[in-house]
Structures are given as C-alpha cells and as structure tokens.
Length: 316
Length: 316
Image (cartoon, rainbow over the protein chains, first blue to last red):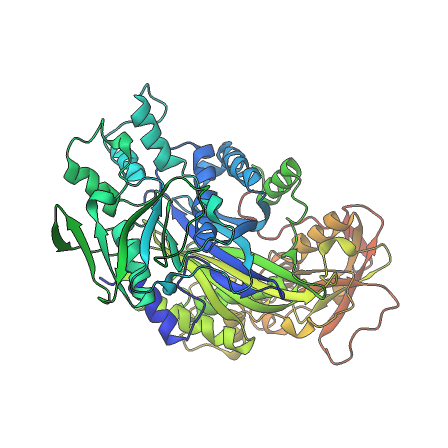
C-alpha cells in the first residue's frame, strides 16, 4: 500500500505545489518577514488513546506537535486554530474545557493566540486538527532540502524516550499510577512533549526537521528533500538514559532511538565549520551527510549496515 | 445540551479570545493588508454522505464552504490547506485523487494555492478539515458586529435551494439519476455550492455572514454580534423558484428558505442610504435592523411573529 508520504509527493507533483512537503509552508508576509503555517490531524485510537491520557495532556500535545513544526523551520509561533470532530460522548462532559485548559497552558508559555477553528459533531472517534501559524525572517526558514555532502548531522536532547513511554502505556502502565521516576518521565515524554522552540532564532542549520516519525524516517525525509545520503554513528546517538532502568537490551534501546517517533527533538544539519550557539548545551553530533543519494548507513561497532526508514507511517 | 455556539462563546470569554467568532479571524499582515483565515471541519455522515455525492463534488464543496467564509468578510482567497482523517477503505482506492481533482477545479477558478495540510489514518469515518487564507484591505474586513438599527438587510441570490436538494437526497433521489432540470439543479445546489466571491471588493456592507447554517440562525448571529434585532418581510425573501415544481406548500418552501442552510449566499446589512453596486443584479432587500436586541420578527401577510433560530446545529 502507498504511504502517506508517497501520496503527498504524488499530489505535489500532479499539481505543481511548490510550497507543500516541509514541516510548514512558507508564505510571504512583508519585506522583513515570512509566515509559517502547519496543520496536524490527531485521531483517536491512532494518534492517541483516551484511556492513556487526560484531556489536559491531550490539549497540550495537540499544540506541542504543531509548535514543533514551527520550531523545525527556525520560526516563532504567533497564532493558532483548533478544529474538532467531537462524538456526543466527548461533547456531553467537561472534556473539551479541560482540553482547552491544557492547550492554553502551553500556548501562554510561547505567546500563542487562539484565533479560530471549527467544531463538528462526528459519529464515533474524536479527531483534532491543530493549526499553528508562525513567523520567520524573510528567506530564513530552514527547509528540509538544504543539506549538503560534508555537513554534520545533529540532534537536540535525547532520543527514544517517547517511544519508551509508549511501550509502557501499551503494556498497561498509566501516568496516574505510582511509578518509578524514570517510568513516569518516559510516559510524560510521550503524553506531554515539549517543542524545541529554544533553537528558533537564526539557528545556523542548513536543513532541519522535527523528530516526529522517528530518526530513521525523518533523516530519510531530509536526505530525500536534499538529494543526499547520510552516515550515522550508533555510538554517538544520545539514547534517553531513562530507558536504562526499563529496557535492558541495547538493541532495543537503539531501536527506540532510531525508529521510535514523537520525541519532538530537532534533527538538523550544519556546515562542518559552523559554530553552534554555545548556550544550547544538549546538541549532539551523530553523523554526516554524504553524496550517496537516499542511502543512510549506520556504523555500529565499526561495521556499516544500511538503515531503512522504520519510523511511524499511517499507511504501509 | 449546549450548542457549539454556546461552547465557542464560553471558550472565547474564558480566555479573552478577541479574534474568535466571526466567519474568519482577521490577522495583521502589513500596512495595507490584513490576513483572513478560516477552518471548516466536514465529517462523514454528519456533513456529507459518501453515497450521495462523488469524490470530485466533495472536494469542490470542502473548498467552497471555506471560500464562502472569506467572501463573508469581503476578502479574496490566497492559500489553502487540507487535513484528512482517512479510513483504510477510502485510502485504498482513487477516492482522494478524485477529491483533489474536484478541489483543484474550484481552486483554479479563484487562484487559490494548496500549501499544506496533513493526512492521518482514522478508524472509521472520513473527515476533512478545510483551511483557507485570504486577504482584505487593512481594517476593511466586514464583521458580523457592525449592523446598526435602521440598516437594511439584504441577501444575494435565492434561498432554500440547497435545503431542497438535501430533502431530495434524503428521499432517495441521486445526482446521477435521470432527473428533471429543477431536481438536478437543487441537488447540485446542495452538493456543489458556489461561494459568492463576486461581492468581495470593497463591498459597502456594515455587517456580513454567509448563509451556511440557515437564514434564521445566521441573521441571529449578526444580531447577537451587533447587539441589535431585526424585522424580516416573508414576502420579500427570494425563495428558490426551482422549489416550486417539487414542494407545493408555501409554508414548506418558506421554511426551507428560512431554516435550511448551505445556500452559501451572503446575508448583509447596509446603511439605508448606501447605494449598492449596480453590477450585482441578484441582491434583495428582505428586512431591516432594529434596536430590539436579539429579537427577530417575521412579518407575513401583515402579521408579526417571532422568528427563532432553527438552522443547522451540530449539538442541540
């Protein structure tokens, strides 16, 4: 079955849609500024489960995933909209009020103003479309397509935590139980992600994407858009240390870091000689861009193997 | 049960959201221009039925309803996004390609460019969030809140046709059957609405809204936002003449024109002495604004009765 990426590529090509396909679309505003816009649809039982989260956490996450797309362009968020498809069971209680409470908690932190949206009744499952607008200096949006052979590859923060949290949720652990600190924090990583908007201002990256699908897939998106390949060093990947107390196998932890999504850290490339802002402490170099088009090599224990995209896809 | 209008009002008030609640949000662009943005969520079996329409018609309508919101502000559309929640049954065929074909047919007519969106798998029912951006001269967006006592009330085109088409669909008639011209055109009115973007340029209205929920409800929205009341003259309401061959009762036709939604004509108010652009032939004066706050009177056969909002609501 075609993936959603194939489909979007097909529509983009069929209609010559030059602004489609990055984390955000870049639209002209004025002489100094471009507008960014992104939409993320979250569907019950696919992107979230009501029994795993709370309305407040879901509201937070619905905004966070879109803010992360603004961050991935080097932008700062401004306005937002929320469209809902609401089943009667969700409508009748205080779910939506609590959802907005969580949404606004995060919105206040980044000065985002809710300006519109829509509410529609829907027969069964709750669905949310989160739309965020942002701004970036004219011509300075960081696209997926700017990576060049020789560029270094970096990630912010640590990886695999959100996927580890998802594993715990899938095994029956819940965020409101009495949990070890690691387990609690991993689940929080999954249910309450924080967008990396601290990198936004004139960040010196040649290409950037947020880690929503998973490193192996998201690096693939950069390679495809830039017409390049990559080599990753397994030993340099900053695996979330909180996974240690729960997953003993290094293979499993590496798999979570490579293929698990939703850490909402940023993956970026930068020219070898570029100095990164010293105030951001948690940036790790994990590899480099090659001319080996669309091929990603993973070096582990001195041995190379091809890394296939195994991150999240809606259709496969 | 609270309506979606009550809920939006509650959220708007709770968080001081001054830009929420009109057909579009108005955002600053540059010294000459404001940006308009609107989102409309369409859910299968609530807003449309797959057995009543075609993918192309649905694509057309998804864009048309949002373009109509841009028209209702006196704006012109620029960019658009589409988010989908897609069940596997819809994904596996050529439904989405045909949807985009219909969408683009209308988009080309108004120079609208698709710039992004999202595709998510969803367990059961198809859902679409249609987002459209537009522009309007700075400070010139026509809000719902500008109606003043003494203003005349106008509508474009004729009313009740889309609701008549819906009645035909509900009774088993289909658009691809051998139909009378009236029946075919009424069903087309429902399935393939045309936004009234011909009024956009500096239209001299004091308040405006598009007729999506139905005249009785949409005039109620203007009255509520403007803090006014209204009197409507039943005999002046331009009932769609194509209803004549199918609905014999004047009561029923008047009900379709007053309470049936989705004609996507424009309802507006203008100062009594304002001259309307003569090039727009199909504008009808149907009443006037009063100081009788939140009360709408219907005058029919010389008798006055109170008109309650009976248009479409998702939750009641």
